[in-house]
Image (tube, rainbow, N blue to C red; front, side):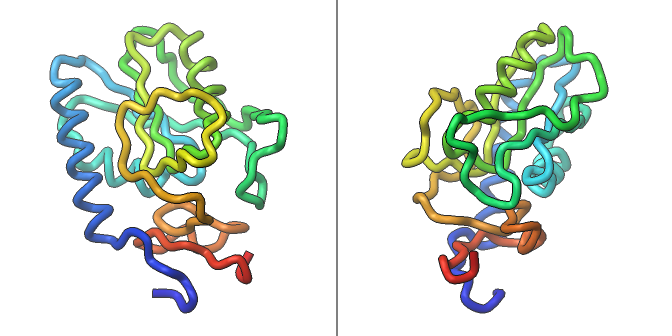
Length: 179
């Protein structure tokens, strides 16, 4: 492990939970003709890849990018979210699953749900690896949840601090003196 990082979730624990989430999603979408996994860049890419490889239901992967964090973890005080990159395919009539790395205030997922619901999907659900309920400001339905974590700064498994630590195979708490 990288020095001074406190491991919250090790690689095996994450892998087991991702496999469990995939099995639940497979069961829930057994009758679907097409599921679209919409990964929220950049943070969700590792979680999305691991989840998608474990799914057996017909699916395709698309990406969307929004700006709300910059190089800092806290969202703008207004909760403003800006679309940087949109999905590339029509979502009309598809079963859509937003795949997010972490939900803290909920502003980003609220924005994405409104944006994607306007595209008339057959269904729209949310899957997040992590949730910080202590920071939640917006009421966001979380259909598939990996882990609930305390209000600490986390890195690894897609999550970063100023573009560092993103590719760690585990999730760790970043101490205040390293931010």
